[in-house]
Image 1 (cartoon, rainbow, N blue to C red):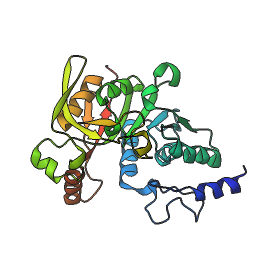
Image 2 (image 1 turned 90 degrees about the vertical axis):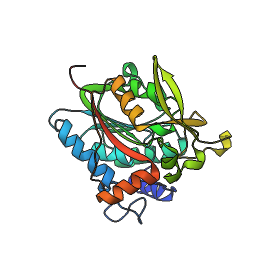
Image 3 (image 1 turned 135 degrees about the vertical axis):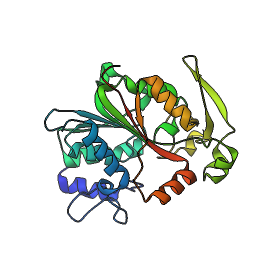
Image 4 (image 1 turned 30 degrees about the vertical axis):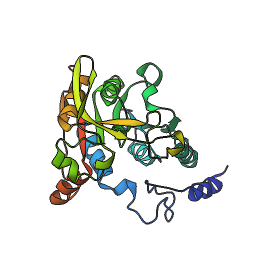
Amino acid sequence: MNKTELLQQLQQYEWTSHNIQLTDTITTLADQVLLADDNRMQTIKQNVYLFCKKPTEAKQRSLDLGCLEGGLTIEMAKLGFDSLGVEGQDSNYQKCDSLQQYFDWDNLKFLLMDVKQLNPQQHGLFDVILCCGLLYHLDHPVSFLAQMATLLETQGFMFVDTHIAPASDAALADCVFQADLSELTEISYQDQTYRGRWYHEYDQESDKNAWTSVSNRRSFWLLEDDLIRALNHAGFSQIYKPYGMFEVEQEFELRKQYSRSYYVAVKPDYF
């Protein structure tokens, strides 16, 4: 297809989240803030400037896990990274593939695969890993964090945007997802115990949608302390929790209501 046909195809998709600039006047979700300008993307960019050399000066790679509709992957490509987005839902991947053909950039690529299959032997190492809206869809999040550490270059960082398990019954009562979360329980990985709550993803395969997990019917949300422990045990010795994406009182309320938070985990060169 030529560029005009690809643009028409992109406009025909039913977009659910990422408002991506396609032309000077056309975007994928006209009634939403551009993904390039939203608070999370701005925070990711700020951390790129803090922890990375300029990609134009030393070619670096970024990995967007569970990239959904491809917007974050595109923004990392705009920053100069060799940017790879990995998506496990075919309906999402079709949009990503059309975007890759439409923009036709050498440093933009998407793969259709389960992120659990990523490995450094086949896919190499990355300077930045974006784990946005993915970790809480996994049934083995601790082993997955250890897996991601093997994919990250030393001095690289991983940006994690995830729901966390409410730590108490009172906190659970404030969370909009309380009906789908279990009582507090434990899982184990490499002789370590981690606490959290099971979350119900779907019952039958026919119940899956573009926003559910790929290969597990329930997922495990870690308590915040246990998420930080898991990151540390995986090899991230510097872990930061950024604030400032919203007005601070609004941010406190959003984090409580949705039991969601953001973390920057750095893999130092002495590991």
